[in-house]
Length: 154
DNA sequence: GCCAACGTTGGC
DNA sequence: GCCAACGTTGGC
Image 1 (cartoon, rainbow, N blue to C red):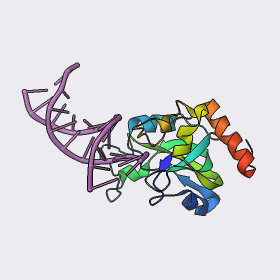
Image 2 (image 1 turned 45 degrees about the horizontal axis):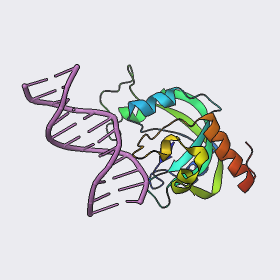
Image 3 (image 1 turned 135 degrees about the vertical axis):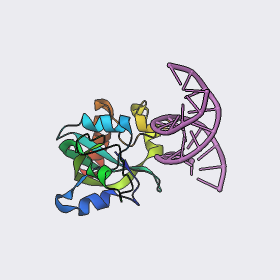
């Protein structure tokens, strides 16, 4: 899941009550559909975009499955969408909880260097989806690397 | 700041 | 339903 740290960062997530926050503001159908497929307990790579360096900043997990994104109903919200109503919500979000902040961001450049991560959506040129799937293999590879680096449990 | 790679909109 | 124009994302 991608976020611009200037908007919402891994540190911001850690500072939330219960280190939990809803992932609002997704206004892309594909990204929405991926969120609707998530279940509590699913792992999340928290990715920082539009910063220096871009890359994976932390690990989180889904703690609440998709429910209507109420920010779409708020006229004053940046992501207001008049076509989404309480009766017929168009946009959804999940709640995620921080698991661990990484000591150092894993830069996108390094992800691209790893042959094991070939085909990972985020490494694809022009990959713009803010919520995207990570294969079992890629997830395991990344977490095993992190386990070596900072004692994170896989 | 540039620009590739999208997704969306709207005329036809 | 096609597709040009436009707007946005996001790496670099």
